[in-house]
Length: 179
Image 1 (cartoon, rainbow, N blue to C red):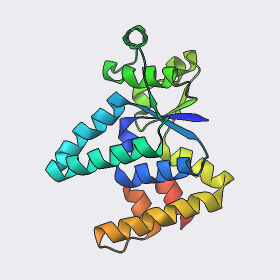
Image 2: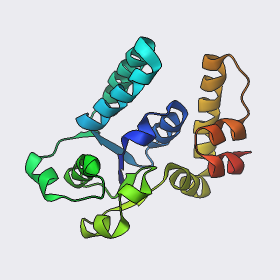
Image 3: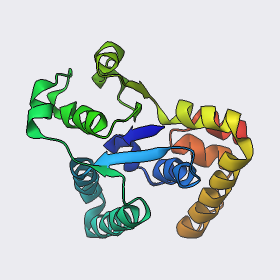
């Protein structure tokens, strides 16, 4: 299965680590475009120079870890598409160009199911998506989550509990399932 990741699911660190940790285990193939990565970089500006540098380094590591993930699309493809928010048509164009099955996003209202269906796509949110994978492969998702929790504790200098970390990362169903 090919899954196009919207910027809103790449920007939050814990969410990104969970999604891409599961992808690295071979459960699905992640996709994104250069523009999606650029949006992530711009969003990181809110965190100052350190945040920009960190996002740049993480984007470079993602490109190395998933060299086939970046898809390209023509301007003509994007121009023929319509979504309620025109600023999101590039996401749909990337999904079509990459032959994605699903768009993973937090912005359900910006990706109406009927429009996506016309292009052979669906959308889902990260919590439901990861929870579904957990139901099919609980040990795999639990191991990824344990690694993310260890990383969060190390980097933050705090002691996080799985449920509270994933709830803060907008993955409450998964957090409850793993607790």
